[in-house]
Image (tube, rainbow, N blue to C red; front, side, top):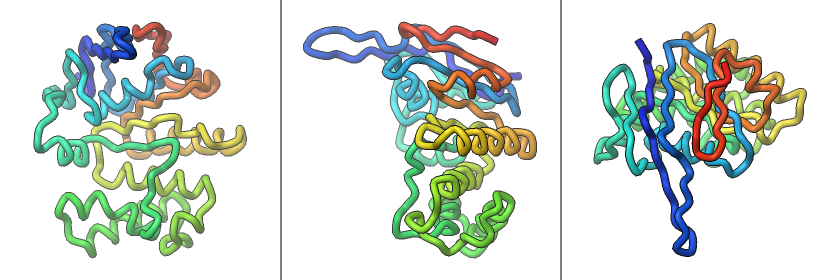
Length: 224
């Protein structure tokens, strides 16, 4: 049974009265603990698709299902739904500058109404598992790029989401650090049984995924 599915997603933008078909009947399905990538040229609509799959943006038509429940209709409870079901990892991390690594990771739990002490304890456990036990009380500006990425990963994992969506997670890193991040994502995928969907323009990363889709001319093709 797919843990995550998208069916016939369409998205069109208008530019100077010209219709731009970004996504045309895009469909995909992912099983629990699957590690999948979507590759494609810059500007082909990968990030738009990921934002729609993550309920950050509404499609023109189509639907999204998580654990066979349709979640694609944005409503007043959409933020709570995203916080509970979906973990996000972005290229630029979006860590809060005035919060420590520990507080950044605990924040989604506290936003969901969990006890502060218990939220911080779970955040500390996750950060320790990602080899950041010595950096708990450091602010983002005091962390390296790789440490910021691991902090962002811990934050994405904190609510035990059904799926983690990652938008160019290695886009700002050199080849050595990119390899380290990919290895970390694959380890988390195995250790936590987490379903991953990565968007990337790096074919080297996409080829190492269990499932590889390519987005081209608004259409999603499954390559393996």
